Image 1 (cartoon, rainbow, N blue to C red):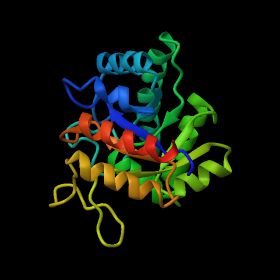
Image 2 (image 1 turned 120 degrees about the vertical axis):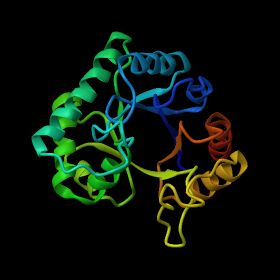
Image 3 (image 1 turned 90 degrees about the vertical axis):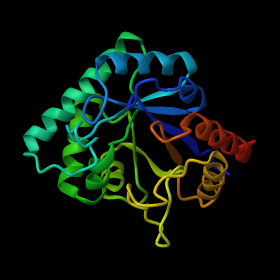
Length: 230
C-alpha cells in the first residue's frame, strides 16, 4: 500500500498538546487569518522542528470572529493581500528556525471555496507561487479544481481525507454543528483512517488539532497508518 501521511491542523487553541507534533508527519499552522498570531506561530514552528514534523501553512479568510468557517465576499486584491501577509509571517518565522514551509492547505470556508471555484483557486495559487514557489505541496480534496489547476502549474498535490469527521451517505462531510459532524472516539477515528487509506483515493489524512481528544486521536490514526505500510 502507498504511504498515506497524517497531517494535523495546529496553532488554533491555547494549551495545544505537544503530543500532536509527535504524531504528525505534517503540521499545518494557523497563520493569523482564522486563528493564531506571531507568538503561536513561532511556538508551532519550534515544536514541529523538535519532533521532526514537516512544516506547512494553514491560511484562511481573515475572520477570527467566525473562525474562518464562513465565505467572505472580499475583493480579490484584499484576499490576496491577506493571504500574502499570513504566509509571509509564517515563512519568516520558519526561516529563522531553518525550517522551510513545505506544504500549504487552506482552512475552513476558503478550503471549500478554492476547491470548486477556478477564479479563487488561481488567486490562491498565484499567491503561493509568488511567495513560496511551486516546490511546496498543495493539500485539498480529491478531484478538486484546486488540485487540478495546481498540478497543471507544476505543484506537487496531495488529496486529503478526514479521519475525525463524520460522513453522509454520499461521502460528503456532515456539516459542522450537526450531530455526527465530529468523531472524538480515537478507536472510531482509527477505523475511519484505515478505511480511507485503503480506498487508494487519499495521499494524506487530517486530524484537527481542535477536535476533542485530538492528541489521542492523532496517536491512534498514526498507529494504523504506520501499520498499513509496515
